[in-house]
Length: 423
Image 1 (tube, rainbow, N blue to C red):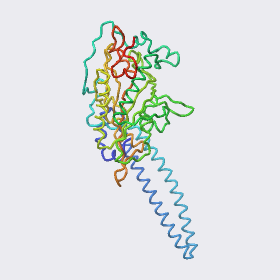
Image 2: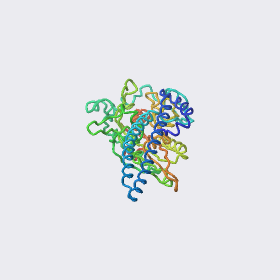
Image 3: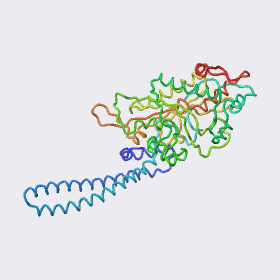
Image 4: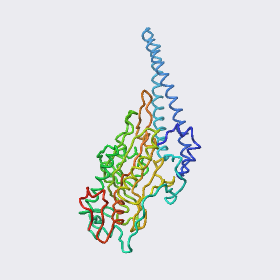
């Protein structure tokens, strides 16, 4: 959530930056400023009434001590009227603050200066690519056919148990999945990330803190009886660990990693892009999260991007890095890199990671601050990234490494799988 003071002092530049995100409700910026002016005016009136009341209280005390009870009682009657007016003003202030909050939560984060203009994914900027694209024989199979051929992932059984988008991993497919999780977690630990195992159900306050609510409730599974949400990513519970926390500046950066299943309704998804592992409602992911000093957050974003690239290099997967254009970025992000791997049998690029800097947008919602020495606490910056999301990684491994003898396992994973080929 953006700060009202920043909106007030930078209205023109805020509006121009929001246009880069193709935000249509530009009028909300001026509405927020106007509502904040109204809030300040009411607050000043309330403060004046409270000051008057305090002054009268002192006068009443003096009169009573002097034995002038009648005069004191007259002033007491005035304080009763002031308190009633203060109560009414406080109610008006509470309503005004709620209205202001309802406006602010509709305004997305401002894109960073390096974010390119654009409205669709086709306008994202390719900033790096690595690895030669595999050339497969004409009879090469897409991963969903390979899964059936080797009986390692059963999509139809998942439909029987739950519905489309909930596959069942079997045998070497389950072991490959577990191997990737262990590999990603061990690499994160080597990079200084503390592993945590958070809940996969969160309350609405946690969803609000990281920006999923009220923006993305339609994409989240909701447990109505308990008013919990199934997490779309470990970012939500892990970042919320630091909600309402003041961190010592010398403890920054804070680095956490977590493996969780993730759940996304993906409402409206259909067609060839949802075949097999391309788009699931339940999937496994290892997430990395950092809490960082504002002056260092963009350096950290580059380091996190390079870290994810290192994982893809070790898996020997051809990949490319995209800087997302304004129209393809999330509501809460200030800048995002997407990492895509090449799926050789499908002849398409598949997103496997998003690495984002949210600057202070999430921290403002979370009341996540840091303190340097005796200075007043300031908002921290939050960052996170997929490191990595498993389904499309598995799809690329299966397709790119298929041979007449079977599917070869990347060498770095063999110590985790216990086998080097799926046949």
